[in-house]
Length: 290
Length: 245
Image 1 (cartoon, one colour):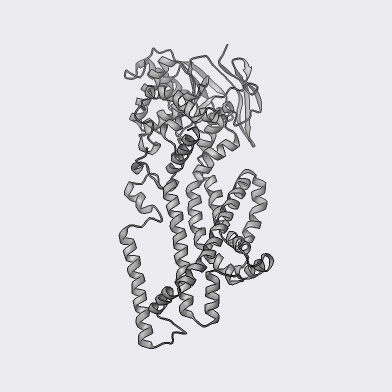
Image 2 (image 1 turned 180 degrees about the vertical axis):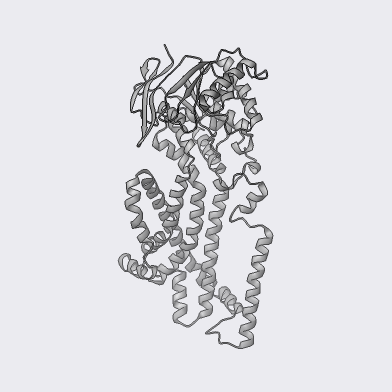
């Protein structure tokens, strides 16, 4: 029971975290400022825009009689998605695996590093330049090398996804720690709190909303990184589907795979947004469990 | 014996000399106010008492013993309430106990009985952004009182409140104090607040600061129930005179 009560209090603690920048806003302003949650009309406008683009594209292809080998029509891409769904779904699995695994490696790494960099100022000064350099490496050149070194399995993909995604997460965490209320830190020190207690009780909870902002930036890069890693050498995955379709002059299948890639990214982004709203999205006024 | 005695304290922050030969005493159950021009180092003085800032030389004695050698901690109430927005009022109030290793459950059951004395009953499970500024301030004071520290350090505790709420809080504070007799060091720049709440007032000089004047406020309590008396006004004028000249 004690375990359960501390777990539930932990959950209620993180449920209460909120974005520090939105204090003092009315509920309405808060909900419209709350990123990631669109209301119905926003979705409708976005979908209508997409539909309009598809219609124009379809019309152009039919009227201009352009070859399907150069520009396939949306309807043709869609029929490819249906015809080749087995192939596409089968190959989405390794891509999703690589993305999620790489993302978790990146998250754990970023957290560990953030603790170290937050604790030791000299490490932050020495380490930050190296980390920034790691972000300047061109993925197109690095990916084949990582595949060369680590083979065609899951490993190089995890490494590449982690390399691409960990930096935004790390920066978000470091900035989040810095945002901790100085008065709160003094207060905890006056109670005799250790550094570690201040870190867990004040700095980490303050950083959580920042972390989620970083996660949502990262997750949009993650699938692209996984696809690119596959592109540079893999046995299966959406990147391989795209590569094979390109080599056999099948832009319709390429685009069908591209749609799957974006669907994957959207799905992962939605998971992130959902996790955020479950953990820290609840605002005082609408949190019935308190 | 004095509850707290600061003897010939010198404090330096980097190149800046903050305090130079500062001495003051606090008796048990006494509210002592520290007044001074802004930037004179009042808040730094509190940080010396909480151990956050080291003293260059001089002694800080708690019941005659070196503060650094005793493991006593003085509970601080900061200028802004510094409540954790992600914790309920009750869980904010137990923060100090939790830091000192009391389990959440035990800490909650220790704080719950006194929550009503702070006018927070029914709001235990509310969050800081759901309650008024005065209630937040009382919650912050409850958090400070809950650690049962022998001396509470109040750093402009009512400074962030609007004028009416501040007066109500002062009334409430005086009534609570008359029952409990906390020993308190109150940092303020509000002369009226100092005269209303304290038994003695220390007026500090500019930096490097030391005590310019010690004034005993010999007024009957409660002082907050009545309009400001003529004697209180005299004290206020006297203190303002020292501060302005």
